[in-house]
Length: 118
Image (cartoon, rainbow, N blue to C red):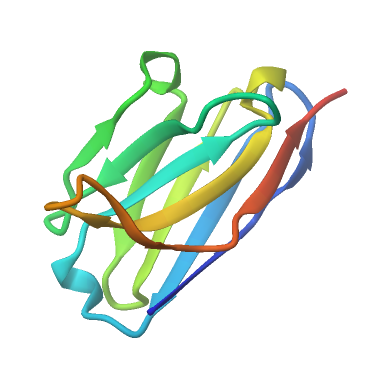
């Protein structure tokens, strides 16, 4: 099982980024995938989840309307589109394979750094 994030970088406030989570090694269309982020000296924050049917749940109210998640089952890839970025969005972003029994991930990627700064 592998999940590999990409697309992070430095962006100015108000800008956009699209993160990708390319997966392999498991039947992608049978699993929910979620994103979370971790900023220095802060707790892990759940960003959102896309279920196997394509339904999206955004966990954090401040992200609703700015972030969205989509998936491409043909490419076994999940995307996190982030718009109107703010400095407080700066963090390492991770994607993980959601385990419905654990109610947490069982595999995750190595993360991609997003820095929002002028």
